[in-house]
Image 1: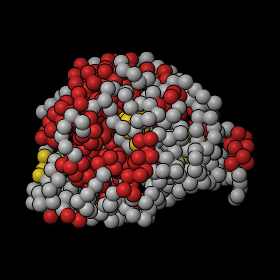
Image 2: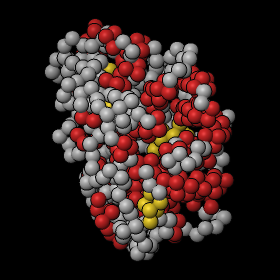
Image 3: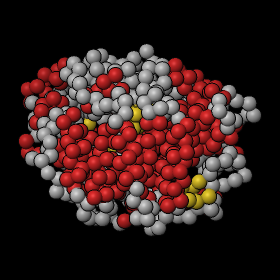
Image 4: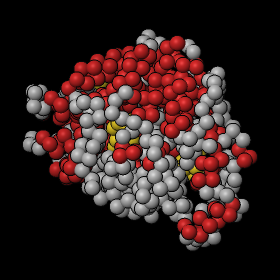
Length: 556
């Protein structure tokens, strides 16, 4: 049964009236409170609801922001900027607005998808500032205020990571425009803010239960703090190298009440269960999830979040995934496939497409014939994380394409599903129940591994933690680490399609330049070097024009 907290969020979306204007941030038209009266608990719930919802109605029809509601959600906007330009996946619908520019790393300061992301993040910050301005700062409200401050710090981290600086404001005053914090200033503020609120939050793992799953406890703050510290050298342009801090926070998480999802159930690996419809009540999966975005087929409906992840990566006749929605738009780049298959000639491909109207049972029989089942690829990769599909459903898939035009231009991604660990579907076949693990314990292992190497300069210091994750995935341990690329590749294998890949590539120095090329990087089939100014996104032109406190990033 979905918990009380989630139902409170569902109630909150109709309990508070919001308006939003994409061209008028932090001014009256984006005031997230349309009247002088409000319900404190509903406002608190709305602060969480903006992570997994896009408006007041559910689905579409009364969005927080004035543009395309389906494109406006927190996770979908940030996911697009963190994943679509990278070596992991592509969006087949290249006729969609601004998709080619994002896919090829060729955006500019007028990019609409960059603007959508900036607007969503700043809208949410305005909401958090509203809550903090209205709710008294006293002992009774201390913990909930700390949670909202965490959500605000999380959003400022996204702004820092994506834009390299932050339009900063902590008050709710329509006459006060945000000021600009550069990378060092933003880093210092987030670091100080997290340090201050951590003792005020619930104990590590306190909310990893049926009643409160979805709220942020101290574990979420520790994981964000570790993520911030791991990227310290990037954000401060080398002035700060907080690798000891990253290691310390990871130590506290790894020694705490969480554990990796390790135990297979009904043919589903411990890893696969993290991305299934019952990941909130299945304790095997839930024990790894430090902070989720709640999704529920009955109560939290939106055209982003896990619906995008599941429907976007499926065609109708693909193996059972617990939904009737199939958008056929997300598929794997060849570079990502290579993380699991060094010799791609060994990958089995269907010889013919499934007949029109074929049922999933008929497709399964053909896949068994061709050896192209999901399990066949997992076995061939020797890694439970190789959740890819090369079968015949709705077409014959390629390993690499010379033209981005079709869903079958790459292998299909089957990481996310609306099936439960007992192999039954979620509550609703149109809207998924699958929560999004925004932070999970595996990140602490990889963060600690990388931070140890960056601190000591010895690549071998990363091996033990990496092999812990490989062991969970039933993958062979790495006998030696001789290149930073091996660590970067492990981030991809563990976290592909989880909305973070760009950050990792930037940190390793691989996102721009020519040291690492992948298919369609820079708009060329085999990849070309990209100018370093693309390591951060531009501040939207209209925001620079409207707010004299802001300046444009170099190169835009």
